[in-house]
Length: 132
Length: 132
DNA sequence: ACTTTATCCGACAATATTAGTCGGATATGC
DNA sequence: GCATATCCGACTAATATTGTCGGATAAAGT
Ligand code: FES
Ligand code: FES
Image (cartoon, rainbow over all chains, first blue to last red; front, side, top):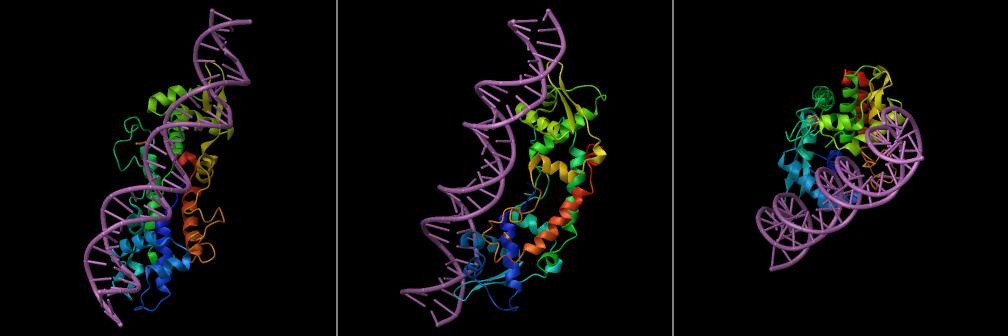
């Protein structure tokens, strides 16, 4: 259905939440999860993933939590999405070479063209454009 | 993963196959399925769907099969995709209203913006652009 | 009329992907 | 030391996609 995964949605919601805070203030997973009715554990993973990728900062221990680290203008949406949900493309064919149709396929080229158009949309868009 | 379903792929492959034929010549489901190693029954459904939507013509009985009916320049890709795999959007939230986050959601607007950009890509593209 | 081959269609089963859960680790402020 | 936070992998559940089956209707050839 050509849709983003919930993990990406949760990530965006969380980032937007963090944006509403002062630079140095921390928000815990629990706080965010409760505010938007997101399953804690799942959100936790997403936040951890973003921390590993240096989009946010993690502070451990009690009173710990997350805060924004990166400049959202510099985070390209293609990278962001691929970071969270893996490769971004209209079909599998073009990642794994095991497509049964591969030899006889007559739509490889056209599909690639569309792929590029979609990627372009996200490439020309930063995190700031969305959370902004 | 933001991908098109196989049904759409199969549909495109089939249409492209039909394009390689003379206007009046018919191709059967079996013929196409075998040429590209597509499961017959699944392709059959997709072809039936396209026939119902008057993109192709169906002729029953032995010697029957399908032939192109519509002018591909007039078939918009958004319509085509939605015809085959249902509504086209980045998230479910914006179709069913049952999203738990709906009340507190802080990314509705931005997501809608992206949605529009993606739809625009397909809106400005006809079947002819792909099967070209 | 009967057989063969084709589209047609709904219901079903298998598979893959996504979403969510659990158990236990490490870090740190009090 | 205890409470509370991040961290992480492995697991289960839910959902969506993909593929299958059984039986119907249509029409050409015999
Ligand atoms: S290569 Fe897989 S369908 Fe074209
Ligand atoms: S309305 Fe569902 S996440 Fe925004």
